[in-house]
Length: 464
Length: 72
Image (cartoon, rainbow over all chains, first blue to last red; front, side, top):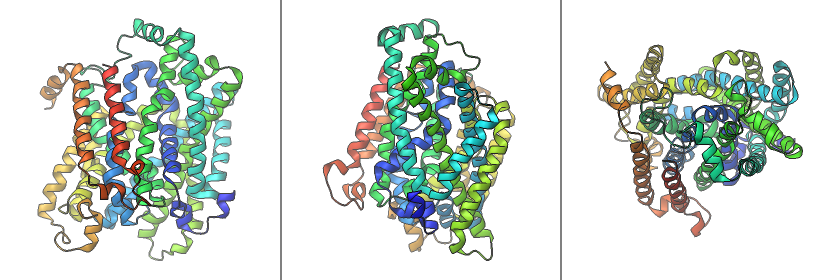
């Protein structure tokens, strides 16, 4: 509420008045990232697949975070944009900006719904609440602080949640290994029935996570697309007080990210070692919290998990609201008045929240949470990443080529998905097509600003 | 059309994955240290050693090399 009083205009609401320090942003990045894709879903996947699930936090994050910190973030920050689609709009054209913002916004509604469902599942396990009650309570709490306080409220809340999350998570690790009789006994118990559960990579012929697809699809495409191009993640770096703070925040987040598997992968393994009696893998984490931690800590961890899951909601709400307010409405509306962005942004946050609440009950039929969200991401991450890489690293990529590749690349991803091709391969193939297509189409439709434009100099890395 | 590629990729031995990953991290380390100091510090308020993001990146990469050595 204190932070809400400081929100005077759209810059305060969407970018915290460009005042955030690196450590707040770094913790907030982890809070946002872990919430959506982590706690419940990743514990479930590690229960099934073992430590290979941690690749999403290691090879599937760290290299991309380092590159984002050193190359992408400085360019975005110096370009003075509010969002990644706004950067694409400056680098390519307004069509690309609106398309990118629209695709991200549609995805975000599903992401809100998935996060809501994850919270409702956890509340159901612990408190026995019906799913719809969990969704209503979550929507109300998150809506109150994120809609009023904007990015500053979201970032500081996330940072606090992550600290609690790590404290609780480390207690689970300590008590779990202690219960198993030490680290060595834990490893022996785990691998006795599941010999590949302590191998970072699964065999190349594995159905879900073949290692070549993990390295090429996740390491080279999905991860850089997420860490170098996700509005939800990068928005807080655009709210940094200096460019160094923005870059340092991503490095700091990467340090925390290295330890995240202790919080979200270890519980799945622990549930397996303790032979948890659970109906579905996604129940692994709630089971561990309930059965491993003593009552006081169990309550603290339960609060941490719920809070961490909520930090996804608040971040997505704020960033999607920004995209719709400035990158879609701001471009399409002929009578766009920037002074009204704050009021409109808050109203749109509320609408997205209500839409997410309406879609949340349907998520249950979509299978594992984590894989569902990754499948959605794989459709457009390849083309989006190609546009960002070619846009930032070269002067060659042209506006018309950008539009063509964005549309055809997503279409290709969708067609590949209908042939039941692994989502990681879909991402890789669509990325390769988009890089090649962007280069080729730019020869047929050259960039008019290629040779002499100060504006272009500010938008590419070599001159940034 | 893609079947021959899938078959070839599916036949690759699993230990290669860790080795390839570690080589990638070493390459990243080289790229990291090729960045000039001016670009690393940017608009930082001072040039204190702890603000050198190349050191942060090096710590990250060393941790990753350890992880992929451990979980082979």
